[in-house]
Image (cartoon, rainbow, N blue to C red; front, side, top):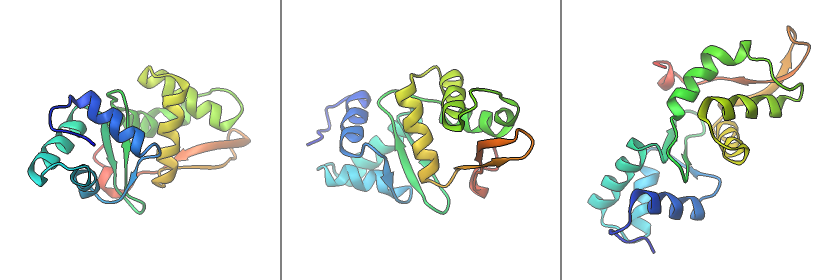
Length: 152
């Protein structure tokens, strides 16, 4: 059970262990999950906000809203902006998944396992899909973001 005396790193580890593929649901789902672990509502909201602010938890709104949870702080908003602005010009390995993973690894300076977790979360949220690119004459990942993220 999560207790109130844990650090953010420990909260992140505990949540990632319990929800390895992320937490499906609206923004409130994270504080609800913390409440279910025994935290009072006010404390659960405070911890959820702190996890998000420090880059351990990232809400992905849209048609399939979910939380991406990480054991290390990440600048996911920066990655989404890079995917929007730079990925189409990026040329990596011919295999589409490897190309997308390499881009994430380079942009966030994470290992391939963390990059795979991020790409899987983006796919689950409906932000990433494999499709044929006629300009490159091969399959690639295409990234689409909901209106709520258009400010990127």
